[in-house]
Amino acid sequence: MNELDTIRKLYHSLGHKLLDNGITMCRKAYQLNPRTWTRSEILNFLTNQLNLPASTISLADEIFYVETVDKWKTITEMDLLNYQKYKSDIFDCDDFSMTFSARGSLIYGLNSCATAFGNIYDVNTNKLLFRHAFNLIITHENGVLKLKIYEPQTDELKDWIKGGNNVLKIGIYKPDWCLLF
Image (spheres, rainbow, N blue to C red):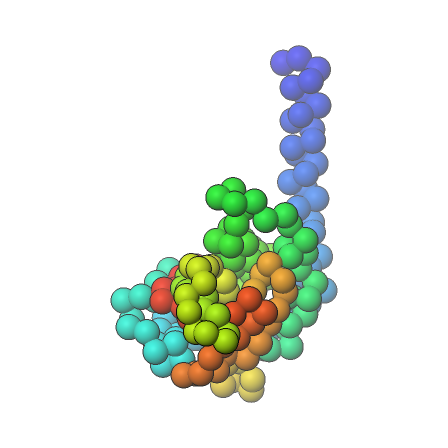
């Protein structure tokens, strides 16, 4: 092994140690105490809130770890993903939303942030603007499940309005498929 390869291995090793220690520090800082719900409870909740058939909601786990609204607000506020540069087909909306969902699991042990795919409609004309990926975050208040809509590119977080127009800055969000992993 040459000197450059040795340096690269050291950088790689140090980088992973920093990541592992950072994850440990983040978990301690937030003092998380999630409650658990089963796959069927989460599926029933999402089909009810989103008015979507169960076949459009993919749940990869049997147990889901759900935190309070306040803890998720802190997580979204502290997350720096919104500073990432958008690059079409390389790091675009699906990458933002999947990365945020994966960070929820990796860093915080919370698998209750869905990546959702759907359409964005113009607020004034209700005409289709484009397809989009975003997040739906399942939270709870005193053991009652709640749903939030989250735009990881802008850090905009709002309550989900069941049966209503869920409007964020870029338009009306209407999911037609979501994945929790």
